[in-house]
Length: 319
Image (tube, rainbow, N blue to C red; front, side):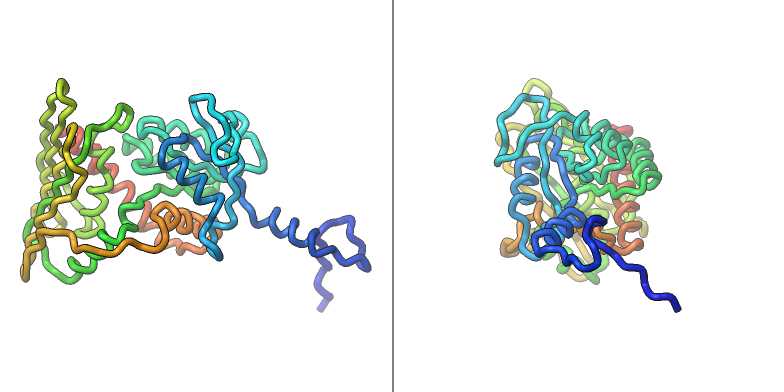
């Protein structure tokens, strides 16, 4: 058997010249660190920058290094990070990852631009406001050999985890999830897409769904809307999803799930987690970048995301 080939940190280091600790550290950092750019500096974009600047110690999120942000406005540095153009971001070799934190209707174009450039993408939900476009983006990511990740922090909340534990093992008879919240700003799309977090809850709790009826009440003069969707589980149990928004409405999720053994009318109270929701998502996304998420888990996640987008589109058509 021939001896293994020698490896070097740098080609200019001879056999008898051991690299310094500083050289080794800088090389390891260069190999492991992934440069990132944040697109959109609203609340989510600001938090993304903050979390990459101060990641959870010992987590895979430490391998992300924010190198700039993109905004339609001309802004001063944010948390010490400078503004760059999208043209510069897609062309730079030291930028490997993009976080898309813009209004929903702008997601598709931004995701496409970075995937085309061979960059990994983390996008706030919903990935698009069009099911067909989402399928095409997944195909593009696969073709380019990069990760496409849709953030769903609502599945990371302690409230949701407590509700999931409460629901587990019970047989649903019928149920309602009624969300209320303030009026949406322009650019967030139809309520079935802007509120897809609630639809995702229902799919995760009760499995694949179908839409039977959907209606929309609107009062544009008062910035009020109420979308009602009638859904069926795979074993024909009825679910009703209501998205109601208007000035002064409290942000709340009201549930009424009737099971074979009990009825749940309140989301079980749960203490706040120690790690922030966006940080949890950042760690999960980083695990995908490191190849530490199984192919099966990636497949299930993709199926869920596309199923919810398809349901949202069907609801919009019926309305």
